[in-house]
Image (tube, rainbow, N blue to C red; front, top):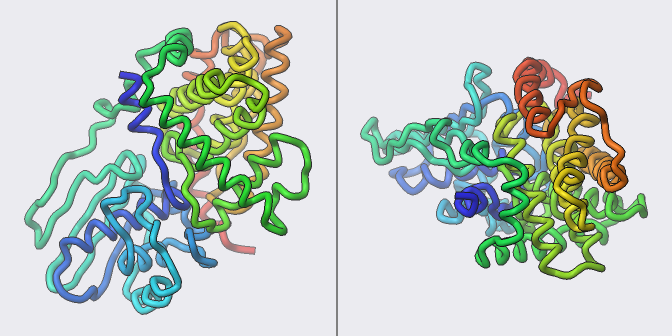
Length: 398
């Protein structure tokens, strides 16, 4: 089951996954639209909307959900999934502008969870719904006639199944992971390292100022991605920034370790990230890269350095107990600093745990074991959900 969960939750993507989900809905609808596009109406949940407002679209200097939709209608490839905008070029950008006035994107604050509801009108009316996961197309219809209809059931999602495992079982799995899984980790190392290097070679990138490794590498990669670099990243639990934050610190520290051990440590970091997200939800008011993926990285670092199971769990607990309050105020260039902050705390937390120094039970949200701390985080995430509504009043406004 863990193998299936990994391949469901670890995937390559171009650009921030929220505007990419919009692009995927449009590219899918385009396949069924007859004639010229007259107008498109796209309604999003508040989290997807929030994360698409101020982030650059890959391969362009532009921000916004409308441009993501227009680009996708021009050159998006639905078959590529989260890599739908892989082939953006100048011709695509030029052609996309004529569709901008036909596209309207709005938010429905009553939507629960991740949802993209796209209606396109041309010679017919096409409706596409994505729900639960950025690439989970649950409904397609043309003129009211269903083409695809598979309602999303959270209880049946693969992500939910990771809750059946304990941390000890996750740790044991990485020691005997399937070769296909380790090959996926190799791809993640290659992709995420490439975009980090691109960021480090870009003037003004957040990663070029601070020379503290691996914090600067994480910041470089996240900044490059948020600034529209047309490079793929390996996402984890629906987020490229989470994918970068839970892999790059271990990649950098692992330069002096055996490659197999490094891959196992990265895999554990990914599994921990996915595990926590199964309790918080994929899109939350909490910064996934800065807190949750950093907790995964801390656990992976301890594993890399031959820490025992209790030390791995304590490292994760240290990060979550410290950084839970780090909020997500939308995807943007500044996410690099949040991810860097999380990486710094992950490094501290790992070393503390290796020296058997931990946040004690009862200190704030820290529980007697990491699984219970994560359950508390899941509950507390729900208690601050109004943040996502209120923050929309400020994003993009000076």
